[in-house]
Image (cartoon, rainbow, N blue to C red; front, side, top):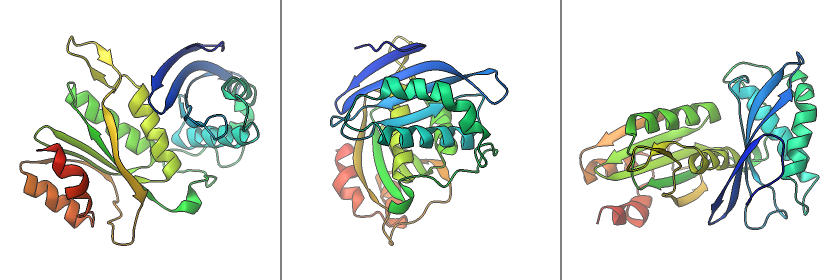
Length: 251
């Protein structure tokens, strides 16, 4: 499955829709070209609903990446019901310099524009299960970087062979994390070759409830027993999730 677009592109077909990774360039405020990596996750109901969008670039701050993503989603709303990926890539190539020149888009890391459709929904929570990590050290560093870049909090938890990721944040941002998780070469296969994560599953997702702990940071934790892991869930006000979604993973 390929698309005719300027730049390097790849496509990964997931069970919930294809994911396109597009490497391109766009002119910045100083007229110098800025390399961009755009990832579009097309849900089954696309183009009747918005695609998931992720923007990456070593030349942009986190605030700038968020601003570009939000502007792309804003533009995508004007294109609902028609194929839009090609138009969105062309649009960002033509308008990147204008987006970055707007007040509020050039701040350093930690400053984030307020325009987000998920802001009205309140914080969201998603629990993920990973089947394995072969290149554990690199994988963990990557997850920590993604969580930091996206402003997500939560836990990366290890207990024996069980690997869980608990994320809290805006729903759209968590969706952006999932796009990265599924499309980036974050691990290695049995031969040591870099590979994408094919065996991540969403165990549950919901709004953060009043009884749930609001995590202040994203942390990595290792547990030596099932009881310790269960206590972590109970302390966070998530005790009911443990028997329903976690216990079966260790049986």
